[in-house]
Image (cartoon, rainbow, N blue to C red):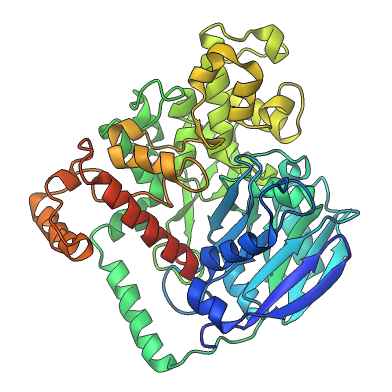
Length: 516
């Protein structure tokens, strides 16, 4: 097959057994790869009643037919399992270089099943795979673990690692790819921790067969140029997703104080301009991407001095900003790198802190319930403290590590009104009241509240009439009818179900190819 390595690596941790299976051509053609391929495997092999944290659950790392090629924005990895937050479908997607190098190592996907008797890590190198003891890595954070693995194995390995949060089976734990890229939202780091799998390291030098490599190269170069000439390319390259702080506040779509409003008065203190002028240290691109949207930030002095690493995204600037009433951007940079090192999802962490703060504000809980901790809006020290307590399940952090929805169920009564989750997953940094299609997307997304896998962008921020006319020509081809001007009106519900369905289908294909 072209575009594929033709092999799937299966690891049974309970039996310490490693096997290789062929990727069947029919499976690849019908399900493409990535999300589609992993979904098919999960559907066939994991039963409905399986506990997400049991050995019977399976964790599937999948690439796509474009992974490892010159196609732009094809450096993504898709990971699937039954999720511990929703007790249902769980998925995550991350950039970096893991997926391409998994293919260079000779495998299109890795299936993890069972549970190890002691902490282990998996090393995959040019067609060979080996389980190794990870006792010396257990308890270390993500960055420390990556440094040690590179010393032990190869400075050029690409890694998927869990931090202490995953080891402690925090339900919002993430799998960190190449240090700062998070497979998050569904708690798949918790699943990896339940299997006592600390890390996967991959490296390889195999080539990917293409049907016509010269024609593919020609098309890939054209796609790169098209991306760079796109009307939004300049802003994305200059600021990454941090530019959304300004845009979302202007349309009241920036969740503030646990969704009490969609506008944060101090948003300018967290703006893309402030970050670029005062904290920008560099920028990083995922494998094969021309955009370099991941910005590197450093706080040079003060109590939050740190090398923040790359990847401070809009979602975190909300989760650790307006969501909890915090305007201290240096604390957010520090908290972001701390969360990455401990291996958690910032949306869910910020969500549960915001939830607890609103309950405290309304007198539903008190210091007796929280173990002496006062939850209040705009407290950066509380943010840093709670990140650590949740990751290590210390004090009230033991309860909060279960996620907002389970905490709400535990408290009961009035607390249930302030549970801002869908299917057990915290609503991300997009207030659906400011965009009807986004609200619908949160409600119907497979993995729980989601701004990516079913979101439509046509009605997001408002467009000039000339662009709307151009969109309408495209819409007529897709839907067979005009959907303008209502389709471009974010507050008009007309046509939004139609648009969300189309967006879900589009995202399913993109996540199966796997592209950004």
